[in-house]
Image (cartoon, rainbow, N blue to C red; front, side):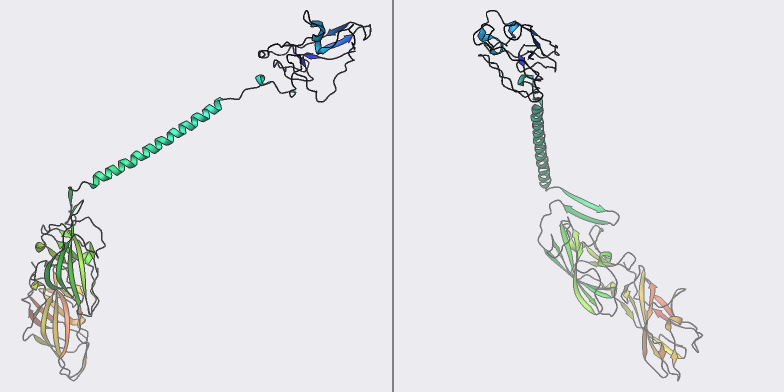
Length: 481
């Protein structure tokens, strides 16, 4: 009878089925490792001597087995029993031949394919080791978990925590530094600066921390006519600020100029205070308004109040300042900001000549008045110019009506130059027998003109229209200082 056994080539422990590892020492086994062959002699199974033949294939080198538990020794085949071993220590607990109750071993056949029953674990009484999955090595032969991964993870978390702390500390220091610098800048209350614009000739004095000053009022009550609008400077006020001034600036103080405006004409004046109004300081520099109530001119036949604010130093000498009206291309008018300034030079100047008459186109033309002014028909005179308004009385004693346009033949001669009227109200139809018809003609003349001549030129459309002239004296037209 034949029986197949497998033994660990490293420690000699019996093996079960197709074990890949020794359950005792952990040696790696191949499929042929420890596959012995037993054969019986010719004498039959009873009383015959057994000889065991093993064929062992040496496995690849394996790690050394762990230390054996005390009192344990691997079992050996019957023909390799150590000396003095008794029948209780025979391999697998079998009785020896010749003993009572001996039963010869049954014939062994190859184990069928399929799961292999687990082997008993060895102990101090010779028990078999506990069953173990077929291809699972013992714990000491299994690859150990890489503990460095946990260490690296812990180190990474620590590094991230340190970086986060550094960012928080740096941010705190940055905010603290900013607040400290801002506090130092705000405590600098003694420094002041002066800004001067050489291009516009304006000066603005300001301090980093303006000192509040009480409001002071200075009466003016000065009146003139600009662009046919009667403007009165009522008073000026010096203060740190005004509640209705929404303009923010860094000036030490504001000078408010309070105005009263009256448009007695039916004409529209076209100007902007941002362009025509300037405050002239004692050092002759000019300041533009920083804020105003109304920027343009009043409507025809209306009256209103207005104010203009100028940034100024708090120690301004108001009585030595001027309000200047007029664009750079216009005739400039200066108003001293003091009580009841002398503005008579800006008043219209009227002259009433005598015997200033002529006959033209069968009609009698008489100049009743001449007026030199700084503005007319809602316009300010150009720089170096004035407006001359010539008032006429026209009589038509003939028995025929006359129709004409004064722009065609009426001129004003100054020196060798002749100027057409810029505007006129002379009738275009003169009825026969009509007397005392009136009309005005407005001319532009050079500043300082003292004498001129009204010329009526020859016209082909008017009968008896030979050229006629009326000399005039304008002694009141003075040159502005």
